[in-house]
Image 1: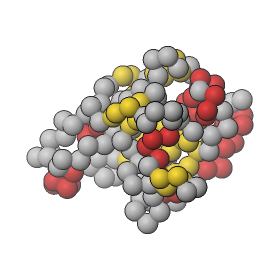
Image 2: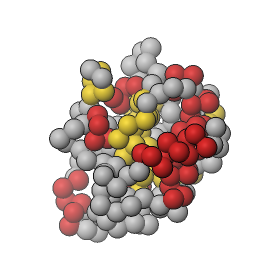
Image 3: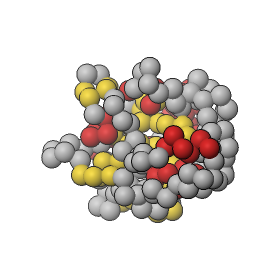
Image 4: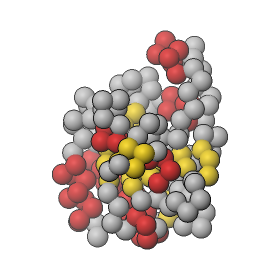
Length: 185
């Protein structure tokens, strides 16, 4: 995989522009990678729910769960589907709105200095082997393109928003991801 640092795009990703982003604060660059888990409706995979949420096109009449998402403006840089397809919503040079109220090692507002990667999944369902492979390749491509990410930590949303978020969940295998990060180098 390859990231073009000038455009902030992952060449292998399908581009679907989200309006839910803005500029990073002056002088800040990505220094953290945050892994999330999401499915819409919950525990259902393969639909357009996540893409529609991140592009503000969610039809609240499609599922009763969506009623609670009215007015929510969120996004991520990348979304990795169960079969390995990658969708990019925000370029890496911009601030995606993925972390919400968050803190990492005393630094608040993690969106300011992080890359958000969503995996199609749920806390109580195992992620697929291809999702781990694609995630690892994307992380390595980001680390190669951005010197500020060369040794950046990779954390779960639950780690930067404890008590508020649980994703990517207890079934996410950090060992599998770390094994792949080492193997692909």
